[in-house]
Length: 78
Figure 1 (cartoon, rainbow, N blue to C red):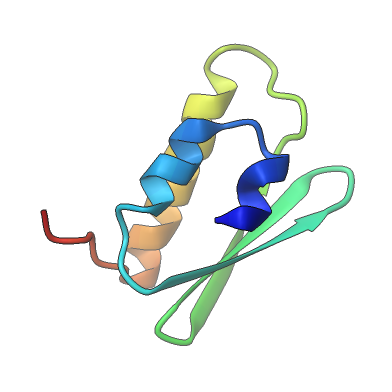
Figure 2 (cartoon, rainbow, N blue to C red; figure 1 turned 90 degrees about the vertical axis):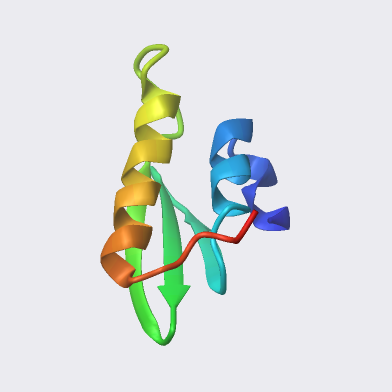
């Protein structure tokens, strides 16, 4: 999760900790590109460097969660 230190969204880091076997990689350009890999399948999520309003960070978490589900990731058992 060290690569997420550039993104000021503690909820995103908290969400990613809830999932098993997820590899992440962050690339920076005009926007952040967060690559998520689960069981050899990979997708990326574009993240704005400057969220438009207070909902922007919530949308980031939602987009990442939907992508992880699409990749077939499983949540960590509690």
